[in-house]
Amino acid sequence: MNHTEFGFLLLTIAGLMNASFTLPMKFTRRWAWENTWLVWTIFALLLLPAAVTLSTVPELVAVYRLSGLTQVLCVMAFGAGWGLAQVFFGIAVDDIGIALTFSLVLGTSAAVGALIPMLRLHRDKLDTPAGHILLLGIATVLLGVAICAVAGRLRERAKPGAAGKGHGNATAGLVLAIICGCGASFVNFGLAFGAPLIDVAARHGASATSAANAVWLPLMAAGAVPNLLYCIYLLRKNSSGSNFARGGFNHWTLAFAMAAFWFGSTLLYGASVVQLGPLGAVLGWPLFMSLIVIAASLLGILTGEWKQSGRRPLAVQLAGVVVLILAIFILATASLALA
Image (cartoon, rainbow, N blue to C red; front, side):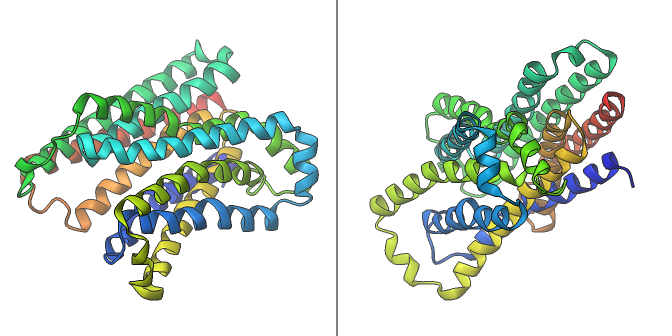
């Protein structure tokens, strides 16, 4: 198996893990959203990144010192922007619903997260046949996500009691979802523009699959700040802090499982980018977004989320999945041509 094939394998596993990381939340019924998300934030963005990075990147302090404070602060700024986007996601869901928000965020993130690194770091590759294939692949991702958004809206309207929902500010929700999509791509920016940290980590003995971990520690720590502040605000507003005494060890375990799946998917994505070569962040991000939507769609069908929606929404959703699978083949062709 060559590096590109191994990179695609890691991406596939990462997409499956990321798409399923919220499943344990279905069983934390004695906690409010902010209870679960606060514990998830502590595990996924603080404890696990610190533990993994310290154990896989030798001479970590030297790596950051040699990379330079400016480089580390740049990565942290991307992390803080991503963390703020997570807060906007929750607000947008209240205004326009989870299906449309999810699709807009992933679609915007796929396009912005791939194009900006391409324009800034590999502009010479853009106006080439391989670059054109890449742009076609990104456009196909956007089309597939848009079809899934339509399916999601149809499903929401078909749900019992849907007529009483959706009274939020739709315009504000759409704007926030697009802003959130741009912010969600900051994870990929941190990886793409944090390449000097990865190079220094590799020179200090980090393996090819763990060198990217040098980026995750400062990025995730900065991203945790907006999430923690928002959760604390909701705990105070909703007086839900007492919920931590309910649910017992089971709820804490479920929140940890969420964190393990999410951060595990992030680690695998970082490793796949290194395997895919210099253009890994450009090619890998839209592939990652596509795989998340495909896996989330299939998991939704298997867990009965489409049972009461009727045939039309499900048919539209499956059409969107087919388009995203086509996008994966196009992006794979681009990766081979750009290699």
